[in-house]
Image (cartoon, rainbow, N blue to C red; front, side):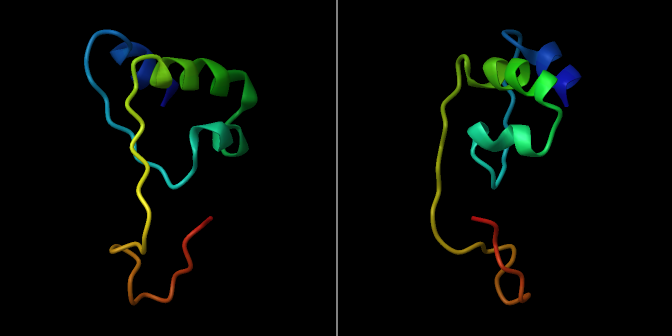
Length: 66
């Protein structure tokens, strides 16, 4: 993922979706890359936060992460 973000950095747009806030990315990836990747993602970013029930998980008995 770092290579994709690095290649796109200041060259084109990239959209990333996650159920984890950017401050929590270090819980799922190596901390050595998390800072650089998050910096590149957030440099010109527009962060859109949504709330409500998941339409994808609705009715499947899956509990969303919070």
